[in-house]
Image 1 (cartoon, helix red, strand yellow):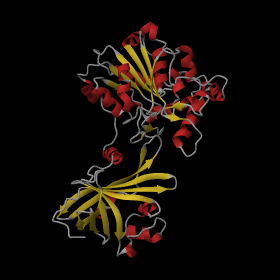
Image 2: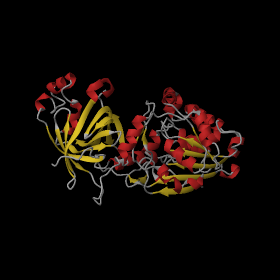
Image 3: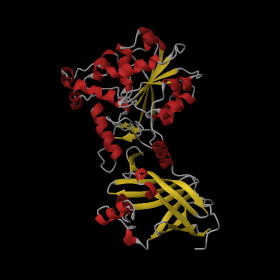
Image 4: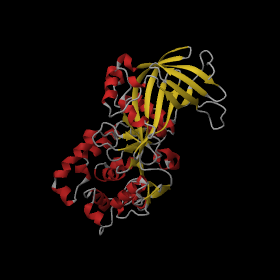
Length: 466
């Protein structure tokens, strides 16, 4: 390749085509199961053996380097058995001298393909911050052909790399922006998820003139980061938002009901078994300023029937009068048929039956004028097709909820027929999934499903119901 021009601009994406390692015997070629590879790594002469789990030729689909004035990121796309994903090794650019860029590895993470078109993140088990200067390296461009986009580079351990620039579909320019999933995951790892403080909530809700929204989360939801994007979207459309914040410790308190007679006979009562949830709703309502007389309930998943129970046996008459709208997103409102095997199993242990017996359908519509709207989705058809995880998960969930799962449509967790209340308005979408997180019962946060489309992504299809 021709010599590169001085200070060649290499910002953007580069696909790795080949490596040439003249000093491979010193540790550039590694194997996770090889003791010598670990010896070289600990001694500072070789890279992490973890990398070999995905960088063997039979496992790797591609390796891309993404360069910018501040970052130096490497992305390995891989398949290990049924697992498909990416290993992202992130580095900060420390200096740039002519065609040599010096970088320091900061962190790494895996992006693993999961359900509903999304990916989850897992940490890369290498403590870069503890490696000191061993986390520092450099890469110098030593050749470049503008016509073909080929680039040769030399690394600080003597390895030579051959890259080709990634170009746009019309092949007119280099791709600069990193893929969306990597950008989102990078932001997640750079900032710790937390609830907004009461002061931040007041400031962000101030001046918004649409009806206030009381947000009731899904099972094991209400943790930091769960509804951040939805909250932002609602506020952008003028709605003040108050989330019922629920911690992992709060959710674990539900286990006390497991040891009661009511649990074993399937006669749990919401105000007793879910007292922590009712308290969270009350606290969210208390944070509303006194001048916000009206509010709407926006509920997700089981939050929909918990909110119905709250309206029935916790909310005061004055509070019911203030509630003007009730909207549920993917809520399993309907219990399995009484003669079905799933009715006997009853995963709610009587909670849903208790609610439906006392406050069926759009119960408060006539007495208090609360307008009910149920939003569902038909995105996933339940089937025992073991080459399709989404369909299998849907089959199992639908069967547990309504007693049938084969060829039943729903959002992947809640079937359409189980998500609609009698005498309520209904909106059925066709391309969104149940949620954009996977619940982690004991974690401080839940696992984000990056790039999964869920109800919040179609907010304009149901926002008028609020």
